[in-house]
Length: 394
Ligand code: ADP
Image (cartoon, rainbow, N blue to C red):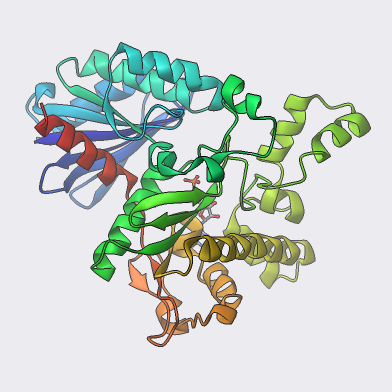
C-alpha cells in the first residue's frame, strides 16, 4: 500500500512516498519557494537526485507535479494508488494525543489552535486542502507534533502564573518535535531491547528541544507554549527572564511583536555570535579565533547540559541519551563538548565512535555509566506508520 508522508511549510512541501508495511521509501523530495517566485523542486529516486525549476503558485501545483513525476517515473499508474496522505501538523492543543483521520472538526480545531502556532498551523491546513483536492479518494491524517507530549502531567506542563491563564487562555507547555522524540525514543528502546526505560532525547537542529521519556511516554520537554522555550537554538533564545521583554520595550520603543521576532530570529547562536545561526559557521568561526562564536557555542552547550541534568534527576536516572536532528546527528564537536560536561555522571565518550555524521551509532565507551547514541530522526516514517495503522482500522 502506497502512503504519502508530507510536511507543508508556508512556501515548501517535503514529501516521502512509502510502500507499506515494508517501509520502503519509493521517492522523496521537496518543493521550495512555492508562491514566492523562482520555485523549484528536487526529487530523489533510485539513488538519483533530480532538480527542476518550475512555476509553483500554490501547494496544489506542487502536488499535481508530484503526481506527474510519479506517473512519468512509473512509481504509480494513477493517483488513486496513493491510498493515504499523512500530514505533519504542529499544534494540536490539549485535544490530540494521537494521530487522527482529518475531518472538518480536525481542521476547525487546527484553525482554533493557529494562534499558538501562527507560522505552522495555517501552512499545514493549506497543505491538507491542496492534498484533498489532488487525492480526493485518499485517507488524510494529521500527525501532531504536540501529541507525544500530551502525556505530561499538570505539575510538569503548567507555568507558575495565575491558574486562570491556563483555563481561560490555554497557557501551558505543549512542546514540539514530538514525532521526532517519539521515533528516536522508540528506536532507543528497540536497541536496548526493553520498554521500561528512562531516556533523554536531544533533538538539536536549527530548532532544538530535549525530552524526558519514561517507559515510552514523554514526562517533560523543553519547548513550551511556543517553540521559543528551553535550550538556546540557532536563532531563538530559549529560556530567558521574561521581564526582559517589557524592559527592552521600554528602552527601545519596539513593539511586543518586534521583540518577539528578535527573540525568535535574531537571538541564540546568531544573536551572541553576530555571525550565523548555523552551527557549521560557528565551528568555522571558532577555528578562526572568533571569540563571540566561542562564547555562543559555550552558552549553547551549557544550556543543553542543564536540561540533560534536570531530566536525569526528574527521571531518577537514565538508561540512554539520544542525539538527533541536524546538529545532534552531525556536529562531532558539539556532541563531544556536551558529553565532556557529563563526566560527573560517569559518561565516557568514545571519541573514535563519535567521529561520525548522520548514522545510528553508540558514541560512548562500554564502561560509560550511560550509553549515548546518535539516532537519525525519521518523522516521515512515523507519519507513514501512524497513517498505515489508521488505514488498517478502516
Ligand atoms: P530544522 O530545525 O530546520 O529542521 P535541522 O534539524 O535540519 O533543522 O538542522 C539544521 C542545522 O543542523 C543547521 O542549521 C546546522 O546548524 C546543523 N548542521 C547540519 N549539518 C551539520 C554539520 N555537518 N556539522 C554541524 N552542524 C550541522
